[in-house]
Length: 231
Length: 223
Image 1 (cartoon, rainbow over the protein chains, first blue to last red):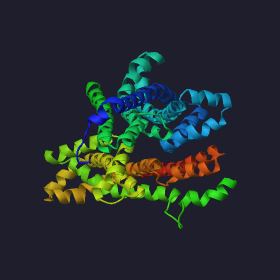
Image 2 (cartoon, rainbow over the protein chains, first blue to last red; image 1 turned 30 degrees about the horizontal axis):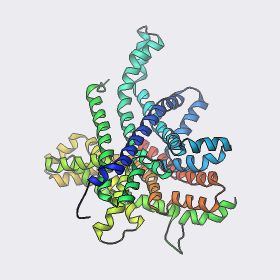
Image 3 (tube, rainbow over the protein chains, first blue to last red; image 1 turned 45 degrees about the vertical axis):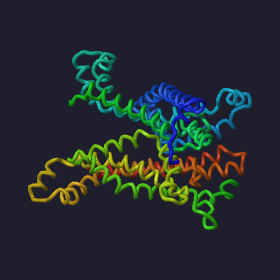
Image 4 (cartoon, chains in turn blue, red; image 1 turned 180 degrees about the horizontal axis):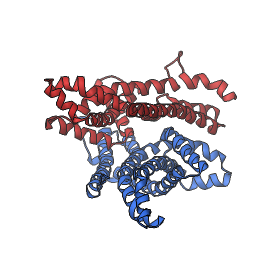
């Protein structure tokens, strides 16, 4: 361990493993984000709805999912749920990358529950008087939403959504438990194959960190460019 | 249910008293221990984050950003592979997980402490100074007591997060709730839905209860 040799993990086959893991991590983050944001917004609207049943559904969804560890969600979707499916569906799952599909399902539900809370508190942070004032000035409901309420709500909601994206990026690493071949999984493989623990983990940590810092920088930029104006 | 009858003790305490402690008891012990040990670290890092000396502020800020930008699992692997070479002896899974959780939570608590300190009105600071208190006494007797009180709901939430994070012990073979659940599943084989369902419900009951506690604390502090 006295001599560090990064060339082993940065060339040839092992580099290929790490790069493919990194790309899959990015892909998991991207697909999950695209699915979780609309789902989360829908849940947030349920929680704000005037229909009691919808409010209950939204609250239950959020509380149940947020109070169970992501690892448990992954184990549940990968080991338990397929048992309920008929054989043809299970076969289809196994031939189409069950690890990635289950990881996306678990990550999407988990992320959506957190995003729902961010969206909800963003909408609630705009005082009701803003809508009333817009209506009094003669804007219709849609126009007041589009021109008065949403522009303010979006400024409040985007920063927490960006930090949720950062959590999502870090959370993809947990999918390694069900054998999804993302970055953490490939790092373990490379470590086992090369016994170059330090080198592998340094490269992996830098890879995670660089994306994380990019996301953080995005959040800082947004808050400078679109500050929340004091009402 | 037969499942519960056969495995309830194993689920709650693992192989204890005939072997190492495990199961739910281990999960709670690990979560509470990690948070308690991370607390002093978090206060020190938080103080450094609001320090006037840039030699203190910048390195700690960098450390906090690095730890917060890294997945916990990565920290666990670093601890798993390098604690033994650091300490010179074999490190158990419990100590490994505890070390990783303390470092990770220290960085998160630092931000909670920082927000708590910055949330105390400036007037408190100025009055303490004009009464002749020095920096250390001002912090210890005036600012921190108020900051810690305001932080209480966030601390309970952080405990919930830590309890959920202990589930990563599964990956390094620590026999906490998730690991025990999959062990039971490997023995029974036919009822994964019930087994993982019960384990998930266990986490839910504890974490949901604690998050309710945090809400009521917040309501009482604001009243």
